Image (cartoon, rainbow, N blue to C red; front, top):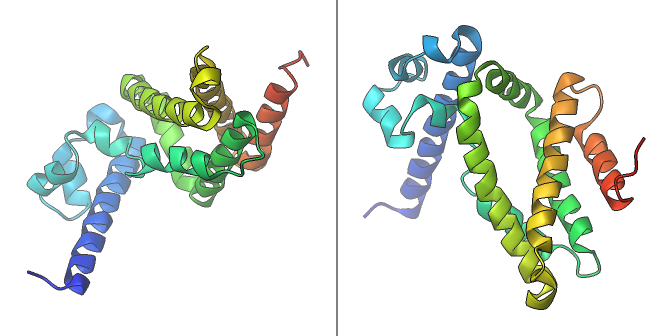
Length: 201
């Protein structure tokens, strides 16, 4: 059995390989389009074998749409740990603002990924499927936060759907302005409008 240090190195190497494959997929598809890139191309660009690629991703589409492995659990955990005095809407805003801050730190990669998705609409079904998973996880966390009686009328599902829609709108606005306005500011604007009852401009 390997030492803790050896296991740590092995895990870091796996994460590095996964990130290299995802980065290679994104860069190549941005240059050539989805149809012009094969798994073999991605593996070669990341300096690994095709067999190694399939140890990490079942397809080139999955490599393109990779997200942090723990995002589905991280957001609900963050929601649960938000200060007790916040409403569910305020807590969700806090969680998604943290995500926006992380994405701003990877601005070039995030904007390139948005561009690739917009130029390759065949990716949208997979993206929507992943979004539903996050939405369900967040709805369950909202329900736990407000309690079963208050959750019975569908509020958690509505809040998670509307909150993630606000996040997507802020992200797309941020991408179109090439980051000239911080994504966090655009997200705050979206949530301010939601909190005010979404009045017409």
